[in-house]
Image: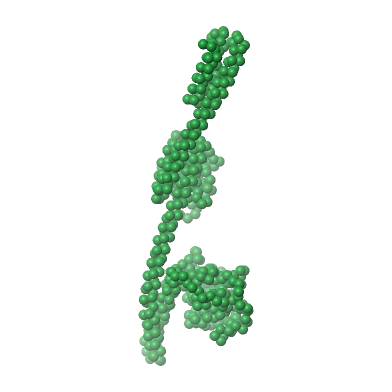
Amino acid sequence: MALDSLVMVYLVGVVVVAARYGRGPSIVAAVASSVAFDFFFTLPFFSLRIADPRLVITVGVMLFVGLVISELTSALRERDHAAVEHARRVAVLYSLTRDLARATDDAHIYQAARRHVARAVGRDVFFFRPTESAAPVLLEVGHGHLDSDPTGIEIAEWVFHHQRRAGTGTTHHPDVEAIYLPLVAADRALGVMMVRPRVPGARLTAPQTRFLGHCAGQVAGAMEREQLVRAAHASERAAQEEQLRNSLLASVSHDLRQPLMVIEGAASSLLEGLGAPANPIYWERVQLLVAEARQMSDTVNKILDMTRLESTPVQLDRRWYPVETLVLGALNRIRGCLSEHVVMPAMPNDLLWVYVDALVFEKLLTNLLENAAKYSEAGSHISISAGWFGNAIEIRVTDEGCGLPPGDTDAVFRKFHRGKHRNAVPGIGLGLSICRAIAALHGGNITAHRRPTAGAEFVVKLPILPGAPAAQADFEVAGVSCQEIALEGVRM
C-alpha cells in the first residue's frame, strides 16, 4: 500500500476519535498516528529516525492535518451538543411556561418549577418567600431540612433585599455551591429561588446559568399573576359586599327615616305643650326623647348621604360662592351643637370665592365642626379659617380635643371608624367619610393632622379655578355681613 494511502487511513481514524470522544482524545490520536506512521512505515523501520528527508515533510504535514481535523471535528461536535442541549432547555422552558399558566396557587407554581428545573439541570430547587411579618423581611422555606441552615437563609435575605444573584458564579458568597436567584416582577421582589447541586463540586455552565435566569423570570411572572388574580378577586368580593351593605343600609335607613321624623315631631310638640316644667322628671324624659330622636335622625341622614354619594352619580349644582358665606351657613345650621364652645372664625379681608355646590359643601363643613365639637371639652376653642396656599384654597378646622389616635391619621376617614372615645361620643363614624367623598366630588381632598399641643386639625384643599367673580367687600348673606365674623371669638 502506498504511503499516502496509509496517511489517509490514519487521518480517518483521527476523525472517528474526534467525533466520538472529543478534542483531547483526538489530539492524542493525531500525535499517535504520526508516531506510528514514522515507526512502522518509514526507513529505518521500528525506529523514529527518518532516512528520507522528504518523508519528514510528510510526517509533519500528517501531524498538522490531524490536529486541524481534530479541532474542527471537536468544534463541530461541541456545537451539535450545544444545539441539542439548547433545544432541550427550550422544550423544558416551554413546558414550564405551560404548567405555570395552568397553576392556580403558589404551591403549584413551586411544584412545576422544581420538576422542570431539576429535569433540565439535574439539581435540587428550593424556594424562599417573604413571611407576613413586618420589616425587616424574614424568609421562610418550605423544606424543613433547610430551616437549620442559617447561612442559606442569610444569603436568601440578602438576595431578596438587593434583588441580585448570590452563590456560585457570583461575587457574593462565591464559595457556596448553590446559586440564589431573586424572583423579581415589576421591580418588586417576590421571593428567592435556590438551586443546589446533588453531587458536591458540580458546577453550572454559562448556558445553564442563563437558563436558570429565564426560569426565575417565568416563576416570578406566574407569582405576580397569581397575586393580581387574588387581589382582583378580593376587590370584587369587597365591592360586592360593599354594594350589598350600602343597599341594606339605604333600605333600612329609608324605612327608619319616616318613623323617626314622626317621633321627633311628636316629642317636640309634646315638649312645647308642657309649658312650665310642673314635673321635672317628666320634662327631662321628654327632652331626652327629643334629643335622641334628633340624634337618630342625624345618623340615618348620614347613612343615606354616604350610600347616595357612593352608589349613584351625584349631579352637583356648582356655582361661585364666597367661603365666608358657606362658613356662616354651616355655623348657623349647627348653632346648637356649638353652643358650649368658643368658635374662632378667621377669614381673609377679601372675599375668597370657591366653585362648589353650596348645599353639599355645607354638609362637609357642618360635619367637620360637629366632629370638633364632639371630641372637645365644653368651653374649648374651635377655629375655622380659610386662605390661599399655593395653587389651592385651604379651609382649616382645628380643635383642642382629644386629638387623633396613634397610627395612620388617614384611618379616621374610613367608614364606621371611631376614635378612642367612641363609647362616650354618639355617632357611627360616617361624618368624616362623607367629608372626604364631598371633597373628592369637588376635585379636592381632605387630610387630618395632629396638633403639637392638643387636638386635631382637618385641612380641606380645593383647586383654584378660573372665572371667579370680582371681590365684593360688602357681600351680605341673610342680612349679616361677612366682615362681622372676622377674627374675634364667638360663642354660638
